[in-house]
Image (tube, rainbow, N blue to C red; front, top):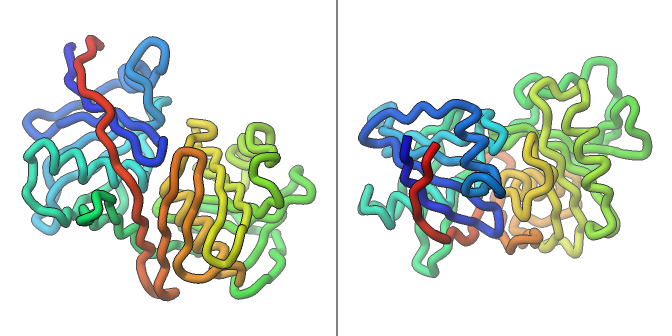
Length: 282
């Protein structure tokens, strides 16, 4: 099959975007892997699919696949690219768009300065909903949150939460020296995380600024991770390290994360850019 696509990026986190509005698009895991392959395909961290709205309350369906072919729950940088895509392709005239993911509803807004803001919904802290198997573990309390130690990974304490997908966040003194490639996969696949976990390495610069690297489930380290940035800021706020409006510096660019109150949604603002368009034979 011959497939049209659009290559996009948000803060260096890159995507292949596909239009499935006119006809269903059911790609096999091998075809999704081919799209994501940087040598034999287009190359992307994730593949995003624009689908018809599943209900009157939203404007579109939004599906996300890792470059391994696995469907995932959420991608914040992808959400920004999603709204840029539907607007640039004339699929909507709205500057605020509501979308349904596999497990959530998001509100996406194009700003006058060209950036995109995404209502990332409320963070989830209940271990069973993350999911995180906390049975038999005794966390250390700090601020208004908990830090968890895991069996087999000494000298590491994690803040654990979900932004619609699972995250574990650890604080490091120097993010450039952090053992992301070695420690990230060990935490990602730890038995305490039945659906695996994204792992954030956070260096606090001040109460309003941090640096972040993220090892993503099934994808390894990416240049930026929107949900990872949100998780790091929320964890930092709950632990008493950060204020409620924080600039996050990822290797691919900067994101503004705001969490106005404990019972509020997290809002992420950042860039979304079209790189090129093309066709590929799958």
